[in-house]
Image 1 (spheres, rainbow, N blue to C red):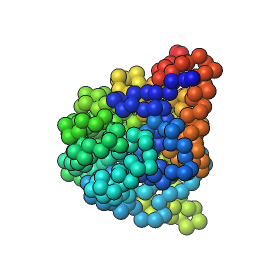
Image 2 (image 1 turned 135 degrees about the horizontal axis):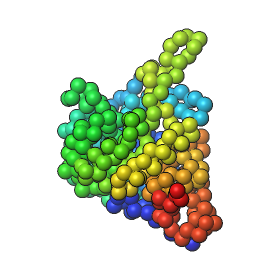
Image 3 (image 1 turned 135 degrees about the vertical axis):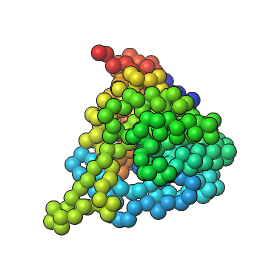
Image 4 (image 1 turned 60 degrees about the vertical axis):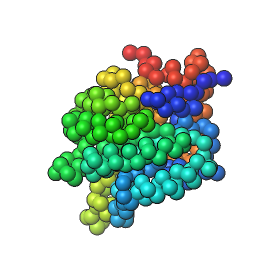
Length: 306
């Protein structure tokens, strides 16, 4: 029997397989369609202080090998999330919940993290910071594209919560290394890699953007090799554990991430076409470990031979 347990920056996971934020709702939408016992964590869609409507329709478009979306972080706000969503989740699912958080200022990030921390609900196992957001109090500069600003916002959230803290980094930077180090120096417990890649789809007949927001974020199989490279770079630059995502459709994709340095993996876009994708990834990792003589899934992390 393969030991599938991993520790992601203080979050004890029964398996190294999670779901990615924005693709699994608030964690209960797949009850009855997914074997949750094969998941080590479920990541809820983004939560900020106040409810947020997201972008107008249309806000997603299929492309070869992936999906471009501009949902716009639609969400209920932290109060309803803690009072209604989390208790409802706890009644149905016995898997740790990673709460993805975001905001328009350093203070807002810290406030939403502090409220979740104060709730102290046992189902909430960690926070994941989405830093691909504009800092409205600093001229709209994106948090995740300036190491100093990134350090400041991670530090503020670190002070506001005792929960394990993961930072979800943007891939569209010259090098991931200074951003990974900024997170480590600011007290993060782990990294999430990667967020979607900026993208655009045009309807050539109307000569107009397909998405109402004009641009969106690219996810799916097509981003996987780029994501593997960024995980490898971050793993070699810091000691932080990594939750890797980006084109995980089967066990091979997940194992690539783990060999490159990931502690755990998240399945995202794949669940839209195959709800049981995460369960299949779990089974494939266990089978690989057995065939290759690994008694623990955790031993795959960084086992790339170079």
